[in-house]
Image 1 (cartoon, helix red, strand yellow):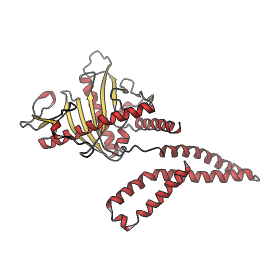
Image 2: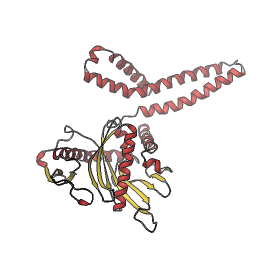
Image 3: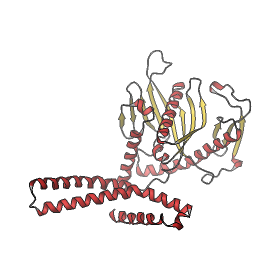
Image 4: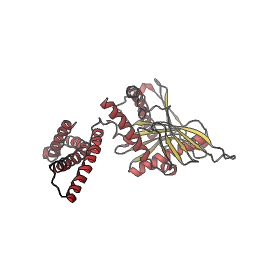
Length: 357
């Protein structure tokens, strides 16, 4: 491991010199690529420097203790340095192993998230809205940009389904474990007997892709126009600006009616369709990898029940890693870092185990 770290540090220092070279600075593409590599290596190098310093402190204290002849007070200080640096070495060594794990090449990419109400009718649609709001507030807290691409509302303000994009640095790395079935247990507003109902919502997190990654043959598309309608089906537009795109080979259908412009709705619908087609292929690959790793976190299986939100108890449970926390209100207001961090840590632990096997 340490031979590799020395090699990486050498490369890091080489990039640092190149970034000051006028010929590199004038080459925008090369400069941008080097800056990205430099930025990706920085956390690893900083941790390696901490490890190196702790190792020096440990070896210095160890040598003084072995030589002996120390005054009692000074010996106590040296012993403290020895114990602290030994503990730091163990922590830093583990952190370096994690930082050396192969990085998911998609971590920095933007995403399209689709949320659909499942079992539970109107109550499921209302919870779909709650999840959309949670993700939207989380994205806002990170300074990321969100945009609704497609929306089907109910009369009570719920979402039968919603597709929206999130753009920003590291978006996929934080959302990639959200795909699956989310279950809610609560007393609906419409419930007169005070009984707790259980409803489900499905979340699909897909990478945002461009024309180069997914080439759609125009002949494979059936594009229909219709008048936009609001909650309950009433028409809100006199012109046929809404778009329905059907991908004939797969039968996938995407509707978009949020914009007044037919052209903009078409672009948004195709954006969602590209991501869905790409996601189908990615799910196949992920399933093969997950089967090899027997991963409990990263399968991305859309039918897997991943999480329960219990309102009466104020409890969130993530079933994949056995995480239970009792601050549901904060989570639903976008404070989901604790949950995501736990999932990331569990995934890293699995990858480490596989790497060491």
